[in-house]
Length: 102
Image (cartoon, rainbow, N blue to C red; front, side, top):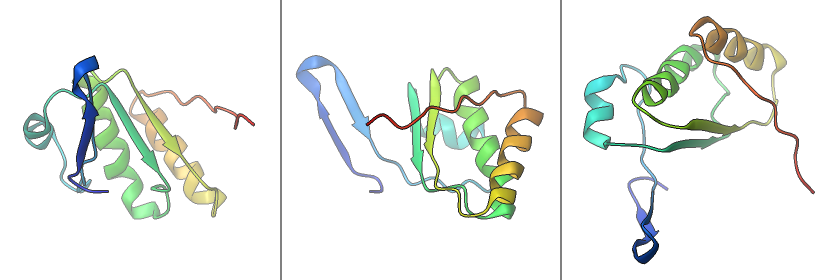
């Protein structure tokens, strides 16, 4: 998905998938996207070098009014996940681990 759009407009629901370039992402790019209620990502915590830009991108959306961010992560490398958790903590965000529901 990237740049696609679908939604149930009669109920006032709009779902949009947007391809984000995390490096250099800031308020200017977020302004172009507009208001975001939720940030959702999956399998995007994989490269330690991309962790700081990813965390900053999430923070930008949260500061601009997003309710929360849901990230689904497969732990391939515990060290990379640890770097992510440290970085979001450094930026003042908290992480809640949600167990898989069967």
